[in-house]
Image (cartoon, rainbow, N blue to C red; front, top):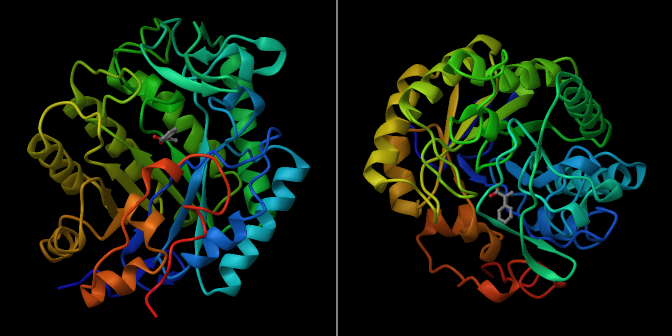
Length: 359
Ligand SMILES: C=C(C(=O)O)c1ccccc1
């Protein structure tokens, strides 16, 4: 019977424990999408995680949806990330980069030549984003053409290659939380009538093609996928999440990926926490690899999820922001530092690299 603090095999890696650091947007990159100079310290402080998944990182200028989020498509970005990955490795950690395209969750002021955001269908989200002047409603998107889809897949390939050049141990494909791939998966945002829309086996096609593209660069065990079947953040709905995500997971099984990362609960979740965990429990029975859960877990709940076989690892988000040495604190059962919500996004060292570790 495994525990949170036992190693877990991920491809050729033996990860030190099953306390993963979830992807956490911090909006501290510069205007060119180059990560903060403090990011190497921030991530290496948290290197005791079994696995770190970086903050969501846009694959291209068109994949950007918020001010000050990092990219992995320019030389300066790759250079900065290579220093971060090296710092984490020197601290004994393992780190995957999360590949992100926001799709419709963007604003014309953030995009090249003030372009409209792209999406599976031209359906504007009832959602806000953050631009240079503050909060703003997202812009009306345009539906991706067949050539636009091909270009986006090429951008995923280039970004995956850049992540490899930067020295990451792998990549996580962001298919959750109402961003581009999730917009293709779910019926509320995908009303296409071509081979990418309609039945679930069509709606998962873009996810499948993205995975296959990334696998041209990375070994299968060095690729993870994150999904969020019951999260409605960014105005997401689906007619039948059980069907949509069962079909998606069964397709993902065919690739022999490193892990599946499932967001069970978020602030904006459809239905009850119980429904979310029940759907996740069903997906767990379908998945034939390492299963990672996230959302609402503390130490004891995480321990129980591993003990009961519900998951092979638990990804912690906000707890890791405030506790760089979270695995040790959870194992000792010591008090956790309290998160300062005012410093989650933006700013400098305060609330980023300033949280103390146990003496
Ligand atoms: C990348 C995000 C996600 O996956 O939810 C995100 C973006 C902006 C704020 C919080 C989270």
